[in-house]
Length: 126
Ligand SMILES: [Zn+2]
Figure: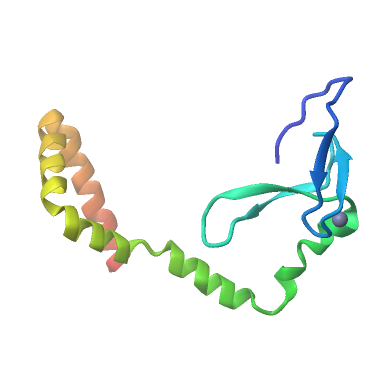
């Protein structure tokens, strides 16, 4: 949620309703907007609604019984291990060079960071 500055004059903006597609005018003070996650990505976009009813309708998908399916999909997308493995396989040499450079830039901090990562990995993998 953003903080809306208190001003006397607000610009009127022409928006399209995300639910019904109606074009309507609104100001930045309108409560009928929310951020909706883009499909397949992490970015969110601000969506505008012409009325309370249309905004409520935009939440309907949460109750369609496919929540578990979507959660699984979300977790699959969150798991970066496979893509990280692929990246490292392709860029192993460059990553080793970078690690060396990082170490010699500040050996003490690099050792501490490595110890921390090792500890974390141990906790995650068990
Ligand atoms: Zn609408």
